[in-house]
Length: 306
Image (tube, rainbow, N blue to C red):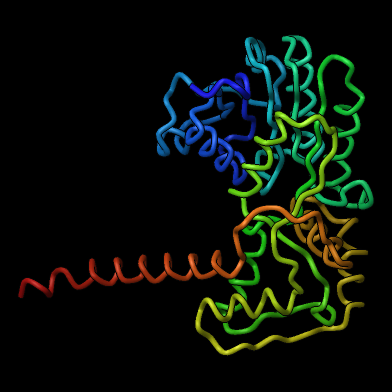
């Protein structure tokens, strides 16, 4: 057992980043618990039932005792797609606050929270307002060591470029020259675990490649082996959409509000990791081809015996 990190609790363990963190902890043979509403995804990847704590993070009473004996909490809690009528403040702020208060009560030594790059300067975005409201509360804690990690966009977020390229054309607002360095979940998971042993309280992190929107689109077309077709629309369209989106329910416009605001300027975080976006797109294409071939083979099975 690798005990140099102490006993770790991962919250949001069945989400994109949480799954990568759990996988990394398993590979490092760390002592950990995974907080989850349902166990399916965790058991499928080989996590033992005794390592899983069942809880509804939006209910403080269901978290009682979850941090007992825990040294470090890593929270990836946050809404990706809104459901059950929950809002960003319900999860990104309040659910994390419920967990933090339980961690403080239990004597946890360190609490690591995953926010988003440049969130402090984008408080007009509802999801980031909720994230940074919690980050401020965490950083003010005097009962444990706080740590806020603010990663740039995830590779999985860049999948929208791939989906557009697959349909035949990528549509961009502006000139396509805005730059960012997205990070793969596996690289970010490694970074989060390394942060357990670091003394700093706030970290920005991005992937190893700085790419423009046009370059990201071209990587998607290349992975799909398709002709590049990119259309640019005036940036004022983005601004108009943003203006009206803030008056609409966040369930419908929250993700677009975040993406359109973030892509208004270069978003370049300190470089970390080794995973390349082009390889991620190629892996998506390989998986889709394999699934298509498998479906085709199944469809041909009745004829093959004739």
